Length: 538
Image (cartoon, rainbow, N blue to C red; front, side):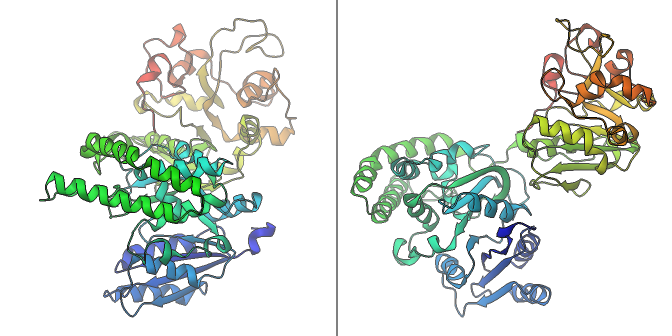
């Protein structure tokens, strides 16, 4: 990194206890961050497993950024969390649980956000709840961006009241894993706000106090995965395991928990209006959460079949071998869905290489997929420019198969060797309804285009070789229009061959035109007509 803020020190606190394997993974994640100016503080809460110290010794030998402390006795999870904060000296601070995951770009992009917004005291991102095996957990929001939106409001009252009201299971406690300005968070007396470490909702109270000072910044990139089912603050005070307690006893415990929770929120604000409104909202909140729990009780911690990771090998013996093709996707939006599209495309096909190009690494990367970092794409115009002039830099095979979150391989058995006879093959286009769309320089109608396509390496290199100017096509930048319409005559004059409609209809479908009826294509683009049967990842 050559940005001026790369000199700012970021302290990362890792409280740990008797989980050496998870600690090792956590240290690998943090030491592998793209932001390197780190202070890593590990506090071992008197672990009895000697392997914890062995892991620490292994990392201390190779990374001087790590500081290690071992408590003489177990001081409790909250005190241990506060301990790593007290030991920090950085400009910024973040907690990390030893069983969670962060994208390598997590700290870098959050530091960048805080540098852009000096009035904001903490920044976080989209994240996923996962089980210990890495699969997405059910019972939680598919996206937390709407959940966190009220906390970005400029009105203090909106931020604080909606934070108190919100169901913890929706994710508000996990703002605790944000990146904080250390000066702001160090002013919070954790021992005091948690009644001498007796209440585990330290995470919520810290966020609540900071939201009184200002909003939080939230990035849309899902750069964090938090492991659930391990007694983190998810269950609104109700133990979901089987219990012999009767309903009345559980109800009383539920009431006491939320009463104490309300009292802590009241204690943590100096605003008389907020104290009054929190007290006023207490009974409606208890009633609302009770009804929610009664309705959703059977849903907690069950596997979410809609989010299963897809195996590369489905067990079908006749796999398609395409060693001269790189399967590639370039994504700024829907990066997780794009990753799933790559995985699905490999289900019955062996490609020479598989690459994901993005500005951050998504959760769930498979070992056979190569991540290539690039600058964040600002718009569809920017994306089109990069496809035309930069995609070739990532391709080393004879061909590239470009796919998206909404267009990928769906029928491997429909592959045809004749596809390799062309430098470009996409989906058939419909006949235009005007007198200018899909027409080349001679006025001829072009019937094959689309971004989901197979392209030869030499076609990708041609715009750079010829220094073709980047010009708008009918008022907007459109990379497939650039290749297949506006400059097709130049490409063909340099030996490029474009697949005709009669071949393209077997390769891909986008528009539901008569020519594609009854055909199963190798790939598709967009869920229209017969394409609606293909998977849609969330």
